[in-house]
Length: 402
Ligand SMILES: Cc1cc2nc3c(=O)[nH]c(=O)nc-3n(C[C@H](O)[C@H](O)[C@H](O)COP(=O)(O)OP(=O)(O)OC[C@H]3O[C@@H](n4cnc5c(N)ncnc54)[C@H](O)[C@@H]3O)c2cc1C
Image (cartoon, rainbow, N blue to C red; front, side, top):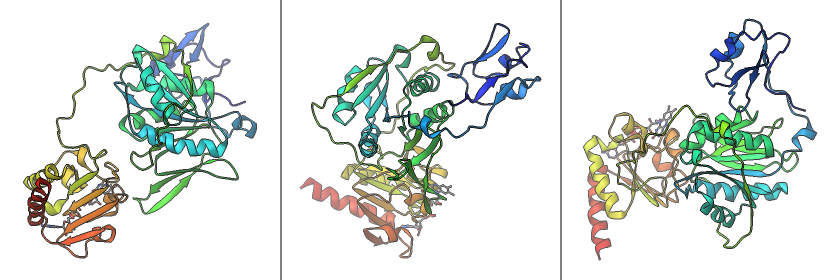
């Protein structure tokens, strides 16, 4: 059996209470003159260990689990991210990929849905391939908040022991999943672009770019379960819809205590930007430092409006304050996979390519015929982007009007 990662050494604890004050997560209480750690709240930050003068708290290195223990972990779980009852499309990509993994392992594919009044989302998840949907429906889960969401998931993982847990590398997923991986004692690979099952060991092979996209690293977690990974949006194919599939629903019982939260949602301020979201756009017109000055993004906006495109940007322009970060494409920005990507005055450094090279068609406009962007471009135009973009706008306006 696996040991807890942190424990109170009963014959050393003198019930001084120092650890209770030191714990930033309110995870320790005194019971019968002994400190007791609540593992659903503990994040293994180690503050209590450092504070205890009596060496009465023992935090262990995680020991590899025995093979028979690993075998008790079953099924492939997908976190079904939703907001106001609308399922994030990354969930469909995860269900598509999860289906293949579950079939390779001979296991079930399960979705885990958290929220309030979300029963209406269940059929969609089943139609996209979920064999079972765990539904945690509670007013305390209406909006995403780190603490209750990660506590409910951790509790579910401890009870049901999934073999694999997949989550979108979205703002929510990134914020939540590390808080689940630590107390669940799981390995976690962030930002995967490829997942498969090793046919011999049955371990999950988690592939992601490393060293600035120069190599693809394949990571395994052979000694512990669940194997957890976040996956970048728009990298994998969405699961197809099969209307009328049947699947099981498991209503999750939630103890009020685990919904305790130190943060509160005050309001939601939607992005004022009215341009098409680049993660959803089929066409993206993207600008780099070659646009010369921030005002020239107006040329891209006009072009984008005519052809119904979203507006992307290189990090250089974002760092210079020419355009907000939400438009940045690349390794430290968004990954996009449009049908058409038009790069205007972008050099094509590896960190930019990491976010857009899977576009079906890439058109590059650059003054320098040797710019690296031309190596990945389907079509290239050598010239001044600030002159070429208005010409394209004019021609497309004419063609589309007719
Ligand atoms: C850890 C790390 C993470 C990073 N993450 C990202 C990321 O997510 N996204 C990203 O984009 N970058 C990222 N970068 C930065 C990246 O390395 C480049 O510096 C950046 O992409 C360059 O932006 P740019 O192409 O707009 O500018 P430049 O490299 O300055 O290129 C400008 C290009 O415009 C051309 N040009 C100049 N004038 C004109 C004109 N009038 N018409 C047409 N072409 C013209 C030039 O020939 C040149 O090719 C990252 C860097 C690091 C170290």
